[in-house]
Length: 417
Image (cartoon, rainbow, N blue to C red; front, side, top):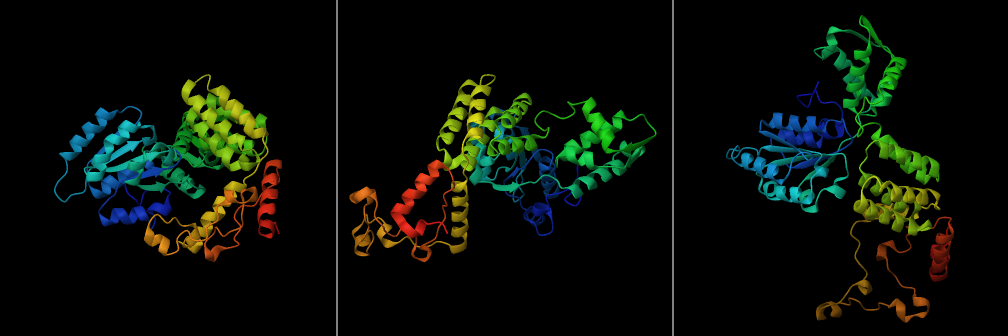
């Protein structure tokens, strides 16, 4: 069932549709190194194979789980001797590249930089956390999305009509709701579930219904691999339970992740993000505790690591909530994109040279610590953006104190309308 061309490929129209970036790259006949980031079962490996097939270049693959620096160097050495003058470099596909250590990633740098190989990495984790910056800077990053309903339905119908074994059977898709729901946008999970249901049938006409799917999954709860089972749904429920101040639910979803064999660092990272995004300035200690939990998990590992994770989870869930910092940086980024590179006011610029001083750099700057209360009114935003408000305090005791101080300093500029 694995597609062999872009026309057979399911989903990711933003990457492989008409005039989309990956299709245009393939059609140009030249490939650059890139990393595919997305949830399981959305076609990362398939897309890498299609690129190699369309460009007619050698394809080498490594798994970050089972390969070390020696294997990486062996493949790079083979790639050096398989290329031809003026031809595209061989493709080196690394599945789960986020599991590569720093030394393994370092061993790739020269080969990618010199064009010995075209690297295609696949990851379910945010590459900015797990891929070293020098390697990330040498690769384009493409984000893959879970497959939507139409994509999954098309895949189902193709499976029952084109698969070598399934097309021999009389399979009727009477209801598809449960199949789609349990797949969670994961093509692999969808096909595994279909195989499970068909395998449980007694022969004759096989009528797929929601009840039949649910019964089969209940009879075989381990039908899905522990890393794939509702992975992103459970993480989402975990974060939303913290945001919603429900420590019982948050602990339950934490336990689901632990029992499912989730990477403890993955959980700890989500806690650090939640501490900044959802608790924020309402309780700045939340970020300190979440970061401490992250460090503790790195030091002690499983099974004791569950305790600092649980401590941080309960603390975050029971804390006052604010997303004012999260909203503030979002507004600031939007303003920067809208207004471009506004010049820094002259009085805020340093004047390390005589020429800069003569041009008025630093002139008129008021050093806040020289004034009562360590504050003095002066302009800090660019000229064109004076009066813009980006941070808006929310209703928690901590932020109320911050807001009152800003009112005392700036007066009407900070008064909420």
